[in-house]
Amino acid sequence: MKRVLQRSVQPDHIVMPRHEGHFVDPEDVTKRITNIIRAHDRIKDPKTVTENKPLSEMGLDDLDVVEIFLEVEKDFFMEFSDEQVESFKTIKDAVEVVSNHRFADTY
Image 1 (cartoon, one colour):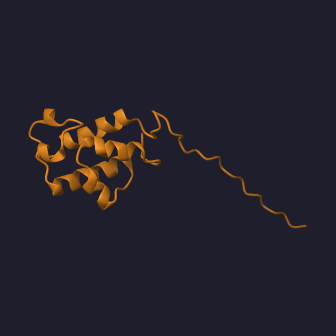
Image 2 (image 1 turned 90 degrees about the vertical axis):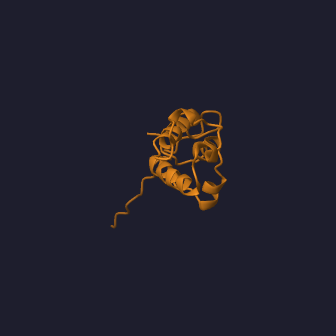
Image 3 (image 1 turned 120 degrees about the horizontal axis):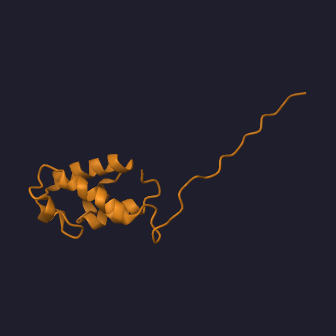
């Protein structure tokens, strides 16, 4: 008689939405992205980096924004499309995308 192996199914360990519908705490995301931007070479005064200030007013050009969001991708283990990066005008715009991403890393 042949034995049939039965597959066991692992339960879904996906974190359910929390923090008012977000997968990741927006405050935590804001702090992490702000710290990445403050560490960039083009930022002369880290105190000028705020959530609602346009990235262009911080002295960042398009290439700087791409470099920053490559670091954000590494930090959160996720990828942005080119269109998403182009749509980020403030830190708050990026926080909305990251905090609503189902698989953003929260370490």
